[in-house]
Image (cartoon, rainbow, N blue to C red; front, side, top):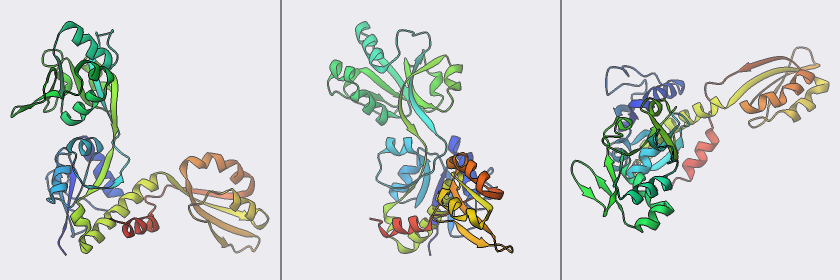
Length: 328
């Protein structure tokens, strides 16, 4: 079988991605010294790429699957299959302006302010498409400029007709652009510290983003590749589900067994095993982590010898099989 080409991101997504792979059972070698780290699965070929590039390469079939940010997936507008929200590396895409602008606290106010002064509004961003869409959905923008596209400016081309609102492509360090090179920025913010350090304040959140696992649609139609892709999907989904679960073991007297089972929100149903003493049973099950404190009073009253484990993975085999059977 041809190897699965798996693109993984560098930058702020990298550390969490390597941790997720390792928790999934993969052994990653040379991740800090090469753009081609290796896995203990010889049928998977890793390559480290910028998250901005990964959606394009997966769409074009140069990579079979990849991990990127939801923000870059929406920015590139490519037609790929989203297999899984990986639920890590949460960030917000925000519109930010200089902190001294106390009179401006929304995009509408920003647009009105610059329009009244007859000034060109310059916004620096790496997200030209998302930013243009966001601007054009704003009612004040529509009132001022109708459905005219904002000007987009890159080193290679300009497009858009509205020269009163210009989006300048940023190649990084976007927060350093104001005030000399931009009036406002649209950029990702994780904690807000970088904005604060550059005397900026967020005034609106455009979207929230997280890491996602994506696949090339043609690769999913190849039976051999599809099997390996769904192996990866299963293991990574197991990591996500494992973080949300607790595996508990308790000993319970026969007289309390039914009451205890009824109070346990089991993943499917608890496993009940007789102990050497015929009046006692061992019960083990997987529960939602956020339900544990809710059921703890019943455990204290009805059971003994509580042992709690955090599972490394909970593999949803039936869910993956259902998804695979309904792949279109």
